[in-house]
Image (tube, rainbow, N blue to C red; front, side):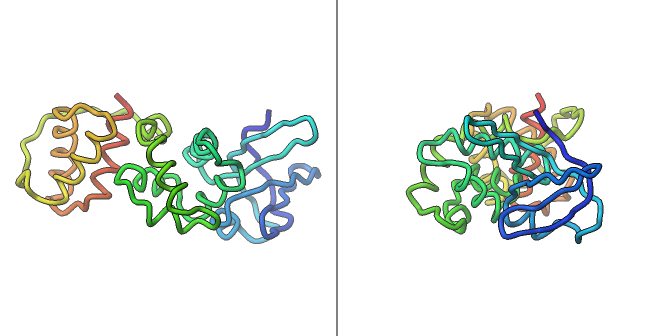
Length: 206
């Protein structure tokens, strides 16, 4: 199966692009956000690919990162969500943004995707919340150092980050250590989303 394409952009359409690889033009369907950020025709590009093979077709889906490809697959495990809806969601949210939206149960961000209503967004969050860690992109080797909380536990950013990560199934003691470290490194100025994103990367590496 094709897992990656490295070639030259030949053309960009409404829902797909043609990528020329050594004279062969591959039609690759991409989220609108990915299409909008592709280089101009004639320039080099590399896309992470998910190859879907069915009896009547072979279709390539292209993404900017491995995290987005994993989310594309994971989204389709939810009842009523197919490739079209998954692409729509990833068209308005990057892999990391979707991770954060599910972690904090932010239906507002998800319903921005065309064809996705509140009920579908709530179902996505409910069914995928405990799987966030499995689709986080690896941030490399990480070590954990216990550091004291430099901000009061009642601080909204710290409290919200700890709550979101604990709700995703991580042990509270471990979560507090990670959030403390991230808060300390940020000089006490990190926002909730930053703490959640950093915490997910660290915790999913353990």
